[in-house]
Image (cartoon, rainbow, N blue to C red):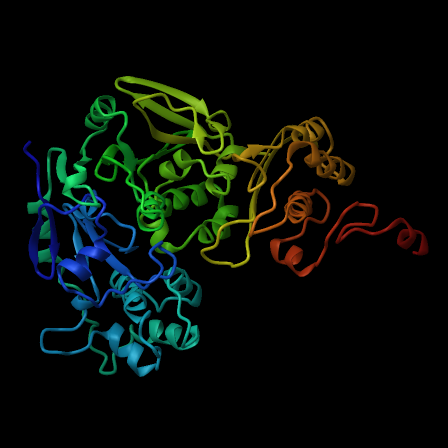
Length: 522
């Protein structure tokens, strides 16, 4: 059996790896094989950011793209053809600290130091990706860059200060940047035109057999491999499958990687559809969605953390079908479709017909997700999406709700309401939709729809929320949608946030409205 080595650029040279398990993580390889222990092992599930590294690749214009990711859940073969940067790369050969490191020292932004290498790499990615003539990053930009890093000692003020100060040089000299030319040259020599076919021992040892990792370059090659090996596990960002290995100690079997298929990373538009390739990262996919639907900006920012969004894919999130996944309610409410392929045959399904049961999708043997098709904005469409969780950043939703109405002459011509966290699958609220359709978008209408939700969902109680809480939140999210989109005196998101309400009925006047008694007193 002829197989290929894993080849990637690290510490100024091209490295080759043979004989490692296909599920060996980048973190394990760094610490245990290369003795590069600056990158720390924390949670092992992509939450704490102690293991943050930066992966470089060439974009469509042969420019170097740098993305911070979690090394603890990235499988080593996914590095093939890419560049890896760790905290060991920051200090100069003569011992001079990088501006990122110097700023962390000067701002007293480290105490125990365990989380610091991860912060340094997230900050380094922000530093390197910022043009030399750009203004200093805003606090929001810094918070987004650091959303995947947790510190339990220092507090974030000095870390944020360091993220600003790293851009400022005391003598006014140009800030030092990564020498991109040798990295780009190395990546061009590493570029494959054929499928990476890597074989490694089972993670439990060679006695358990050999596992294969295929990374095709074209969608046709992916389709052929999928047809030949329908039992192989498709993996993209491994933000979910990685946890099967690190936390559940599962053997996922042979892996079929989509991250090198250029066709699957494309994002295209026409007059009717936004087409998002299944291997487009969540960061790129949500940027495209926000460009069409600006009201999704905060929702997109709150989806996981930046390193997770830069590794995970929208196609993977949809195919996984978690009942608490945030993408699906949004896409279902917008009327998205999923494009599927098996061998040479392609079919298209409405996304709300894709889920058959708990983490069970309508995929046939040998079939895979090619793309998501999202309708473009149209006049008279009201749309909002909300995420309710215990933390603002990087938290799993207790409830996620998305709402889309199309109005004609003040009446609701069509309605789509979808929730996550309320059932075994991401699910439309058909009873609520029926109560909305044909009605005026007014207080009585929203009251009826809120009551109808009780016929659509019977949510579970778990560690994140009780059934009663979820039911109440679902009702109130529908009310919030009304308050923000009603014709008379609509409220901004900030105005709704400032108004504390917990409405069981709508007998009382809503915020911004005048009661009958007040009118009479006037």
